[in-house]
Image (cartoon, rainbow, N blue to C red; front, side, top):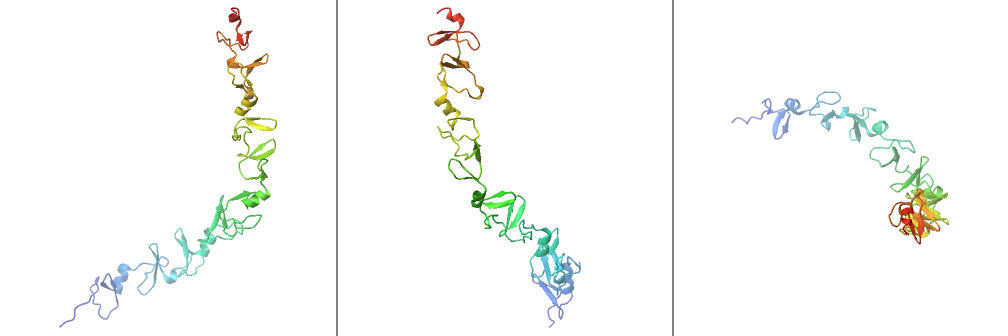
Length: 280
């Protein structure tokens, strides 16, 4: 009885007594397997045979002896590596070539290590320190002044002005009034406590007032409408014998014609134009 044939799936040559490789349970002779399935090395362009180790990365293949750093030629087998524009490098060469340099120690910040960044500059985590206390800032708030970084506590001790009202440091958003520093939230109307930063205000006896409070407390009242006459900001009014009127309110009591810049008569508490005054 003849033995069952065992041939190469591709060339159908007998595999008895020959080396072969199974792929998906199909046998191939070495020559056919390499022709069909082996890859060419990225560096030497030679076939990576069955007896050689095939190192692959993103559909690229190397002989183990060809898998070297492009810069320093050290073997990358079992070592970390990085790529830039398809160029393979060890992490040291990659870092020296492309990684950020620490703004403090000027050394390379290695890939994978933690770094701090601010306004285009980078630091090692342990190099990103307060210029005053030398403690790492980490993720805490900080202030940059004259190219140096300060934790808030040190900045306040060294540079910050103190609010004349609450006596606490002003780190952001201060107001200067009569050459004295205030927090925005501390600089308020003495009457209604509304913040005055960014709006018109006036003062009396060294106290600051919003316009509404100042007018209600100190302004003269219009003899006609009884609302305050501020006189601030160039607003015009008429004054006559201890009485004042808004320009718009200085009208004849009978015919309502404006008397601004015209002659007028008085009748008790009323003012009249000359025509209406003839009838009195």
